[in-house]
Length: 405
Image (tube, rainbow, N blue to C red; front, side, top):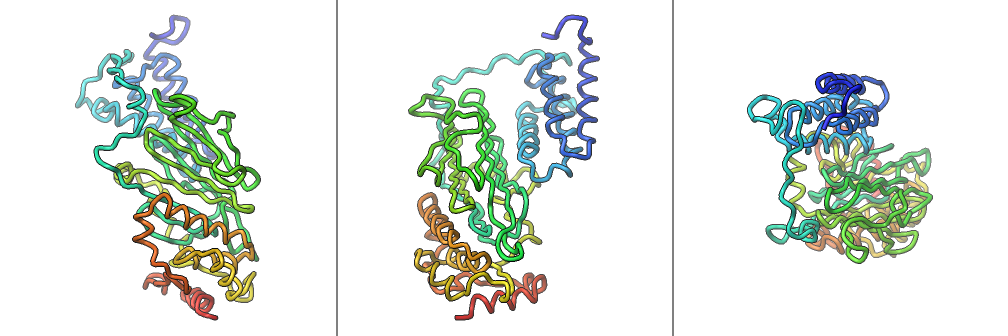
């Protein structure tokens, strides 16, 4: 119901909100909070949620506002979350058909509340992931300098610095921040992980988790550790697997697990989702998500890179000896050696060890397929023709570092 006078009449209020939304995103800085605040003003003022003309117009203006600020919001987790959610809600309410006139809205432009949907017969069933068949797990991991394993099983070493989206779905978004480390800041490593659980009307509330190089909290930023369901069987939960070192975040209704580890000054992150949930993500949008597309080509080395020999913080023979003592193999061995040569920080041995252990634990089928138990580096050096043209001098350096005794 719309507020009584002296508030603006229905048409005038809707026009005012739409105009405000369309102009909020023009600011030079990331204006996602302004766009979102104006959108909420519309719903709070009486624009009812549902497949109505007024709500679809408000969503359309919200998406346009977000698009205006897109270039200044790259990597901002709140922008990625808001943009993905706006598109998801718009699709769910058939707004494209309503706005084009192909579908009749459920009410007039004022927007009446849609008849309540049939309640779930069992809330527990609603909030527990149910797949039509046994869903294979998809695994994405980021560790070290940083080294990335995508959901598709591609391994790469990225030269990414600053904030980057690891994953963004209608239910969960993850952002990582990498900072320079090592001699002459050649290498980067992950110093912050932000996990945003977008919440579910029946299954749990919106929650944000933030880990940094200084702290691995055992609770969400609001101090809670769970929501939805019961305390002994929560739908959303964060818990310590090892105090100060390993935290697990679980979302039951999409069968998702996010594992964050703090090893030395740096963080590793692992994400496990059912493969079936990735199909829609791969069809929609063009935003970069490291777990889906990997890092940008210009940010990527085909195999673990290294600084020039004169800048190496540790000899290859010493790095190889240390890494092999942690029983890492294949890409994880190559990555460990590179990290030690680039930084001299032995905590990267444990980072590689736990990353390989997590792969076996969370995705044993993928581990069997991808790992060959190679323990004589270089294990996975397969330079592509494109890398020869992009990094001709670097190729010589890489081969020298990896092949020298």
